[in-house]
Length: 183
Image (cartoon, rainbow, N blue to C red):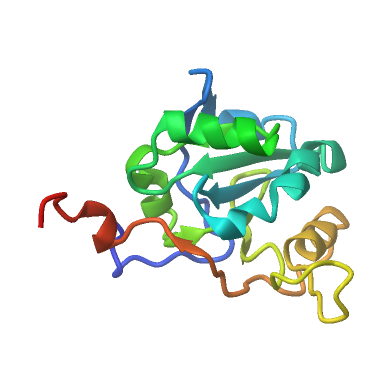
């Protein structure tokens, strides 16, 4: 559970994690940073209608940014591996998904909704956090990308011009997810 008295600061090393993918293989954030310029971590849910919109973006991410480790964490409270596998198959998801049962890592990272993106430097320090974009399509004249410009700034060695944006989406944990079934 999130401790609201704790804070997360830019330049701070975020908590390491070790999680399993859907095939049962274990992945560790700090180990995956070795030889990379940084990492992008996305908190995601198979049931979040907002996350569906980013399937193709996340499917192409590793090819677009091979210099960055890329993690997508299925973190919604109560989300089962079976439900995640079903969504992956139905939606043609090919990015690696790690299961964060009960949203433990999400809580450690002060994350309350999906999707939420984090850009870390090669040491695991926080560079950017927030939304991927303003939830408009790229062809919309009001479209604003947030994550990609942050990545571009970081990889070019420039200060990230916008380090934080508000996230929107589906709750990772809600009282409605944990109410007794028989009310």
